Length: 276
Ligand SMILES: NC(=O)c1ccc[n+]([C@@H]2O[C@H](COP(=O)([O-])OP(=O)(O)OC[C@H]3O[C@@H](n4cnc5c(N)ncnc54)[C@H](OP(=O)(O)O)[C@@H]3O)[C@@H](O)[C@H]2O)c1
Image 1 (cartoon, rainbow, N blue to C red):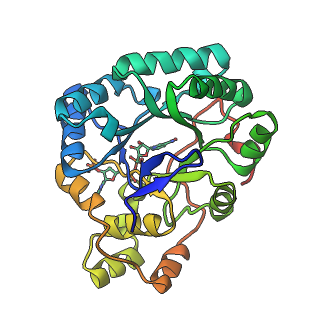
Image 2: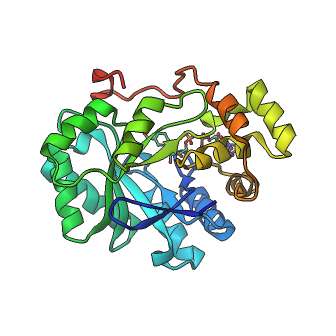
């Protein structure tokens, strides 16, 4: 299975990333990033909202891995929507991360100001400051609305995806438009570890439950971004390229879908304006 995927504009992105929400204080964040990069992660996902961009920038520098070999994404939070605020948020993230270009900038959640915020993203992209631009937590309705005003379609949609919330309609829509899906909370914040089918499959393939879940994402063409503060678990989570789930087992995992979200939607978004 390929360890990279190609975005709409031709740039490559690693097929698994490292999630960084709630990694801990700055020194814990630095250590986690150094560990993740040492193990082989080359895609790191953060957000202005996570409050850890400084630690992530330091961790990258201290790791000794070349900046060009790392794919780094950050996001613009809901209170920074609109053209000017989005540009300011981007600049602040660049300062905190201490980098001179960004790989991927995302609108963290949809709001009433998506089209203005997106115009700022398009300008930053065309100026060469960002290699790819995308959205997060956009449903089909948000993407359809954005299509009416956008010059450039989002290259990525980062959404909650795990076997109990697989968002089939939205994933199909994104696949049709070649919008790469990135899956957040891919192991359901740990809750998948208690699902009997996942336990059975872990035993059958002699893998951990997290590995079965992440492999399911990979075989569906979805980029999972698991978070862990433990080097051992980080190693486990990326070690998923040496086995394959059968079509039948993929279908069994698909059947776990019960439309069960693992996180609440933050206030001041238009997430609930659409069903899909
Ligand atoms: N765009 C968005 O709106 C959005 C929303 C939420 C998350 N995200 C992104 O997605 C990333 C991942 O999501 P998440 O952190 O919510 O959930 P997750 O990755 O599904 O789960 C993380 C939890 O699982 C545990 N864990 C990790 N690997 C494990 C393993 N191999 N065995 C057992 N337990 C394991 C972690 O504990 P330890 O840390 O103690 O190992 C942590 O408690 C975030 O960090 C963030 O980058 C984006």
